[in-house]
Image (tube, rainbow, N blue to C red; front, top):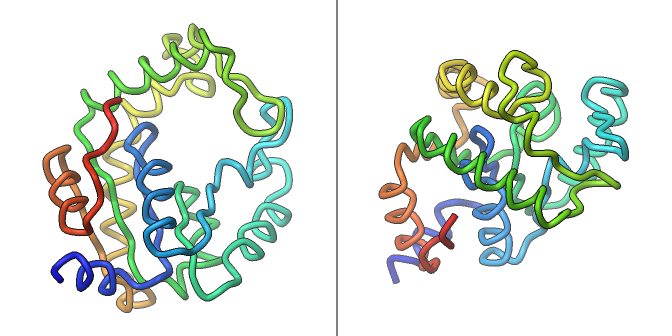
Length: 198
């Protein structure tokens, strides 16, 4: 009964946000299955072959893709891209879930994930493959997720604080999860199984 109530309270238009390796895609996919609505992965809409990002090269096309993907009555969006989210689907949003894990957890995860993807030659969006060694080159900030996580956590928290304070988003339920324990408690509340080990 509690799980049913918690699921209903989320609504059917949800944004799972957070830094790299916080678990956005995993939770987003599980929530979309739970609610029986599409899962919209913003990275999949953004990245073209050769790591060409529409957010930088063709913002209007990227916005159009997001609008089309979130035009229905229900969806779970996984990803950040706050500037685009704000202008496309935030006005219709029911719940924002902010995964705000400690920096150390995220750094371990990003190194482990990048190593695994590189070793397995895992195909990502378009025809893209992840490389591992550039993640360590923090002096090349455009290539390093380690640099991104280390430097952007405070900015992301400020961004989410601004979201909560914005009169235009007062209609949105805000869920701020600050640890692995809080995420597991949230999952149990919804009747989801424990998160897979990462």
